[in-house]
Length: 227
Length: 322
Image (cartoon, rainbow over all chains, first blue to last red):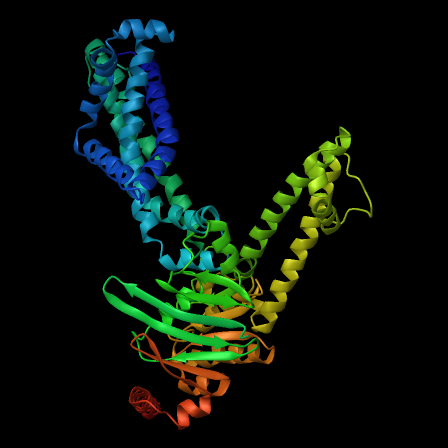
């Protein structure tokens, strides 16, 4: 077994994993906040629409959602995936990655939105009222007073969710995206050894180890005040 | 005409009647205390006055200006509401300091945000003025707003009769104005801290202070916006008895500055000593109103007599414990 060949292939897969991870985070974190506001909206139709979306997404497997996203072009718009790839001027596997990313972003935005909502609703009403009687605008109250406290409250549940995200990226294989896990699985057949899977495990372990340290650091940084 | 007039305030929460035909008025510089048992509507009344609740019906006038009138259909815009709220300051029972900011920043936050808004507004206006000057345009806008343009130029400290001709100059003027105002705000905040005797705590976070100290900071925070009337919602109810006196002392010192104050309190002795007028509320109505002497020594209604004898009992109980 050629170790350097295995590692090189794993690193390529790991690149896809990290890319999916970053794209999901960058897009799902703000989208989740929008969903959270939607689910707290005083305008009932929006509130129930968002709540229903969140319910559906959280109640069905992510794997199913990824598949469904890939069916949308054909079953909704009657476009073959190949033609869509041509029209968008991307390779087929890039298009598949985009499908996976869309499913991930929507899925994680829903989970994040619930975390945000819980944190926002747990901020005492007195904080808003204090802002109001000091003549602050709604936006100022949210961005200058509430958001920071929300951020501290979401750190622990977010770290949980984000670590799960790292492992969930393995689901990208459903559409043939060669992420870290898929790369390892493919290699098991070529090198006739289970070692690539173990190596992949170590990759995940190290990645999540770094994230755990990062969150621990952030939590310590934010512990300068008590409520 | 009185300084603040509350005219026929009514408020229901669902089917519960909380305020029923509340009428009272107070003069500038007066200290008025509202007493009464829990659930009598004192806090709701205070919250209505501070625009945290909206009375179902009623009218409120401050300094000749109608702030609230339920007979007017039109709802206030968010901005109008903010301006109206700023007539009043409110000190909460639970302090509601902002935990992530140090004491000084808690006091300065609102004035600084308002300064930022002012700067933004002035910069926008002066940019337009500069543009007109550079292009030598005589617009209708300039004609119409000549006076207020001049006023803004004066405020930001432009030279007399100066015509601003570049964005750079505008930016410099705003920057200078901002830093001057900012140091004014900081000075005022430091003076307020000295007044409440917490100068040495200005770099502490609220969680590092005792309840009494927190409440004193909350008072300073409200004062930083120089409200016309400062309201207190049971300012000592969340405090241990030994911390109560330091807060009451600060409030008493404000009376010396001729501040107009409206105080909801359970501290009978304090209300008796500090107030010019006392309002006794029961079941959402003003049951009795008068000087401390009238209320405490010559109560008329049965409810007030009952209330006073009960609170006296409680006081005696406490002194026995001590």
